[in-house]
Length: 516
Ligand code: HEM
Image (cartoon, rainbow, N blue to C red; front, side):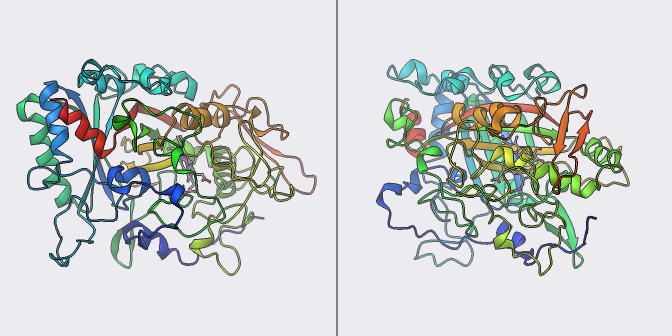
């Protein structure tokens, strides 16, 4: 019998303070190998900004020389001239002192915006970087050069999710530069958007071909509308966040080993790629997959209800994800989203699937091996492409920087015709070895779990590319009870847009601007 309580995990207010709170600080362990050049690295690679709204602008290059010049203005340090790209340093670089700061000291106040930049391969060509830099080479990064549309099949972006259906000019070759503006409030969003739009148009530098907004889902608490970490299927997100050895971000400690920095920042000590050339362009950069993913909330809720004779709808939702919708992980509380005594928010990510001695939940009796979270970060579970039981299997990790788009779903108005989904970046240093590997081998394949044999047709039940004629999600049960088999469901997500982007360092943007 499933117990279901209305209480949120203990200290759930911590989620909100994580959304808006300042980081605990940027001091780093004295580990020289991990030293990251924070002022040179774009901020969103290493830090979640915890701002409630975002706007993405897709630009096509108009006049290349003007476009290069404009990019330079975004890293000039002169904020009066143009909003500045946000770096990974704690809040101050590129920002004028804010209210409450001591103008004589280093301003530390959280800014009201953050700005970032991604450039596709067609973008680098259109900016004439290929023409002007004969040494240019992205030798280890064939996927980036091929682009999201050409690689779509490898990650399950087929059928309705295929590039032929993408919106906004994505995948057509005119998708050159993505500018991403986070803001603390609507006024800041409007003000910086207007400044940016005017700058893009100056001298015909860029044409804006598409824009989209994301925003934290709001809920009313104590009569006040407050932002949450929820996503549209009703789950709490933003709990398992990738930490980087030497990085500035401090999440509540969990048992997972921090990742090697080269997995997310292009560095000379990388084990599986050569730095793009010239080095000035590559060093301290990264890559990201920008994605707009529509979520079929109505279909998802109907699916949960349609299986209620087999399994409680909330338990099914938890088994599909790996967490109850309130964020409590199945590994720590398999039967209830409200474990006795509560669960501190700092504990929500403190678990393992399989321990070093093979104990834990190797067969998926608590959390199915095929659940979304367990496929996408199998932790200590030995799977295709990684590992020892209990090992720190970090080679294929991703950093997620996304926000929902569309308003909170109202079950009383299921057919409101409004599109909802997730919008943002999956960041990694190797799109092949991280993003594509995970989606190709773990999400959309059944063979990934080594000795644990999953149904050959099974895929990630939440985000896998499903064919109702053969889709299956098997939920193993303890005490020799027969597993529950859920079949005949469609995909709950559709890719609406995707782009493979290079995230240049500040030095690289200056290099581009200096090309004249
Ligand atoms: C709209 C589609 C999606 C929804 C609703 C969704 C939802 C979720 C939820 C609720 C969690 C657990 C929250 C947490 O632990 O922080 C999660 C974890 C995660 N998701 Fe997704 N997700 C979606 C798409 C994707 C895609 C396309 C990817 C990868 C390309 C992805 C990668 C991850 C990763 C890496 C984790 C963390 C797992 C861990 O570290 O344990 N998700 N997702």
